[in-house]
Image (cartoon, rainbow, N blue to C red; front, side, top):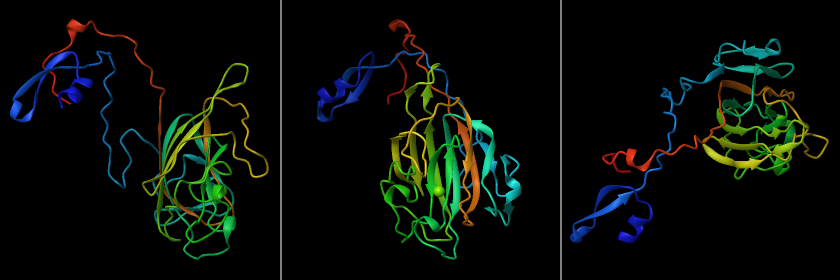
Length: 263
Ligand code: MG
């Protein structure tokens, strides 16, 4: 027991209890790195966005999007009638929350049934599809990175039921010579279930070509696809993510506070 405590504690002194053996004195480890204080936000609840989110659609107003004239806003949701929508704001690294529902009247099959998609940077599609008892190629079903990575599981709800995507996107990086220096990565939770876990983007997601990168700027608008199906959308918000840099400064060890709480 003492050995395992000793592995993760060094520095200032804390007291650990070791059963009948009584109090044992061990050294606490603290990084001493001068991190910035994390911002305090209101996390909201299941139906409200965090206080620092950029609300892109609240069920009533699509003014954050170009192409909205081709969508209809109904009772707390929006549905495409002719064409996709593209966010006016460009995004790079971003967290996206999006809720969607496949049409409750089942029409078509495979890729023709409840098809839409969220195109990160307008180039990298997280597939939206009615994949409830609807077979198609696996790297084209709901939660796939289109034609690159199938979802880890099929977490689809029935047609007509509201579903959520929570997406973490790290944009690819290109250097001044337009060469790829770091690929993009996508994590997707479908209805709260991880279906993409830091999946490496192999490039743009094309219908008729293998994936490949085409250099682009750091931020580009996101796009929601119109594939001819009346997929409904509500609550869409985004949080820009900044690259975290290590401050690289260590406090002298004698500045460490010895009385800080355990854990
Ligand atoms: Mg699609």
